[in-house]
Image 1 (cartoon, rainbow, N blue to C red):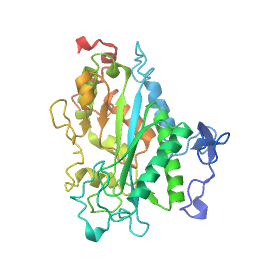
Image 2 (cartoon, rainbow, N blue to C red):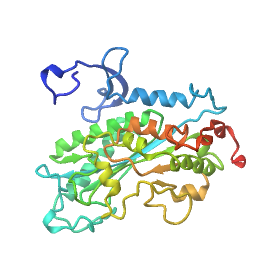
Image 3 (cartoon, rainbow, N blue to C red):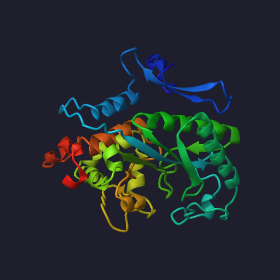
Length: 343
């Protein structure tokens, strides 16, 4: 395996692949398998693009943090979920496949979850792709929990999770592979770019849902608030760089473009109230009603590296690795051993 095909011959580096997860093969059916591998320069040195290794290391910190020596009395048991959005585009110019640019104002074209909406073409084909992808993922053993039409033109979404620890990356990456393979069969181009066409008001995200055991137990909302407090008092730049490692930095445009009011602001943190939908961190209504559950970070783009993002969010809202000066007291990990009544 080579490191890339977009380099000079002298820059090619042979890579080793190591299997890390196995799924049923929805294309050839049982007993055939799909095997997910990560990449290594040598048997002992991971490739630079292999963020799975760093993710594993961060999840191990939750069991025993070598920096502080903290070992929780009860396992943290981190769960993640990712809402993967994607857009079906034309091969010629990356515009939505079913909506002509000359006929539509994308800043006002909101189709959220609708059926039977007026369109130019291809929507039935896109929906069939979405459903076939869901079925293929279920067959493969990918932990998907739903799919839907999203709010933008030719935009769709499916949800992966909850998955423990590093498995969120394994399952999301395999789901993406299956989606792109099916797109080939349908003759459709699927893009995971957060901004397929620069300057246009249609974007895609990869909202990241996260919890540890304390958040999911009775009174867990207090631990959710504690985690959000760490995020709100952290320097956002390191985590945003982890969330968007693409060369074009399209997520910056997605988070700062104000033409689409339904997209999150990149620095607004809300703990309570009625308008949490479009904030940086969202507490879902059912979580607030039950007083426990998970938080949702709406900043990651659709092209998010799930391994890097999961590790980055844990570092930010559990360990406080990106806290601004003057907030060091929030790094006290003993809070995760407390009863909710003590917070």
